[in-house]
Length: 435
Image 1 (cartoon, helix red, strand yellow):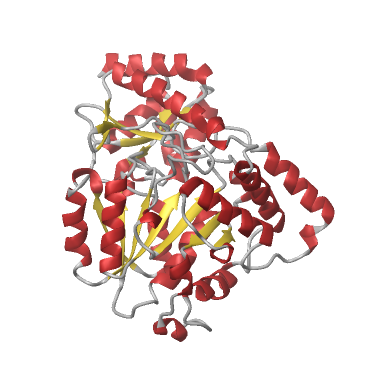
Image 2: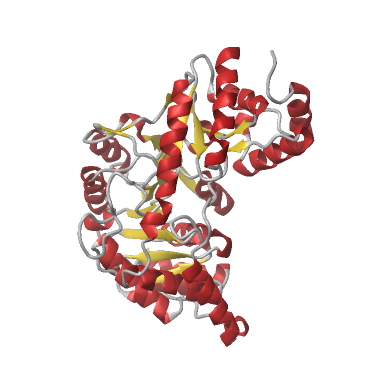
């Protein structure tokens, strides 16, 4: 069987990287594997494995960060809880684009959303002695589970594929009524499936976490990127959907990486609801100097991890948020390119026999966005990924995301340029002819 890249090159690269089955490999291992095959074959890959921005970083942020460095902030330790202008603009942003009230004190910069989730896990587990589990509404971001493993903490998970809409209530009630879950984690829009929870589903989550005294960790890494609605209007509906409308027990993770394309500076926000920030848990005093959740998160967990995040990057994020708040930065408009790419790429894949795995949001077709999921008849996800490498196409298997859809792969659109669409079609056509 003739393939765009000879099997010898791919098989040799897998041995060099130490990957016997690409379906079990981590994202970073797939990145390295694709890089090695590309170098050995001289053929540019269609890289869909890693969720990195494919657009230039916001110039507003770059200019603000340069100005801050020129003013000398690089020589000054930042406040652990954040630069005050950033906190003020983050609070404004939450009101203008989510229609929720979060005090500046609860808007805390972190070294990427990953630091925010790590700090939350460290504190949430210690709020209640008898609650030992984090519950992932999967599929989800694999590294958050890795964080729990590093911390020696336990988790449960379930694939939401069969539990959309009102079915979600019964599933969550079944799991939360056991009384051993302290945190629920999900992303919205979702990495990797790109499902987007409806207001009804968020209401279900909010009501049940309040009932069972659980904290929600809502990952908004892809803020506003359900392009079926325009979430870029300032202070007017529609607003970015969030569980914060339905419970006080929440921590939101807002990242500058995707929506502002500012990934390289690792700047994000942990946004803690006002009542959650002030709430006291006696058990926290066994580990931190205060039993107040917000104090423990900032001066306990974050202080121990890194004692704050990049001073100059905080100025960049503050200025980007201010520009958005003032109507001078149409940040949603600039990332709509991802939706345009997804629409074209999904059409190409389905034209040549592939299927979309997570294909609907309740009664609506899935949105076009940063990710989509694919399968091919007769292949498991692992088999499909290993085979696609011979065609110069990389992705990740859904197996590693907590998905039960073992036939599927996650495809990220960000690194694929429109100039590559013809090449992608040629390779998919060859794949179909061979299978």
